[in-house]
Image (cartoon, rainbow, N blue to C red; front, side, top):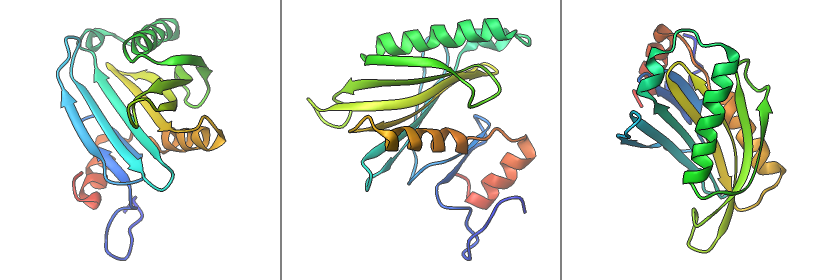
Length: 183
């Protein structure tokens, strides 16, 4: 078996499998899934909280219908699409103090960003986000960790979270789903 099991036959705690979206990721606790339709295509949000460290982990997948017709786009086009999507996210989500750069965390165009946000944890409370945005196939992935401080711990948590993200083949996803009990 390709996946480590505990004595109880469970997959490593926190490992979440989404065959629908083709990924495996490690979350700190139970994952809440929210699906909604969007004019551009279906949007699914996966979130989990580390209550001890007061961190919220989110992975949003937006399957943009218009991107389904892209036939092996070049890096320049992918960068333009990712940047356009990121700009729209910043405008719509009322973030401030946005800083970003092209990251080398993956071998495809990925934006690494940080920003602040009002009201995520509680009305009137400023929080901070560290995350990554990229395009795989027709889907935009936004991987973020939210915290109450913009510090090294937040950056480290975001890097560990995005590093836990894997896009295995269908057979591996199916095995992982069976081992994990079908998240």
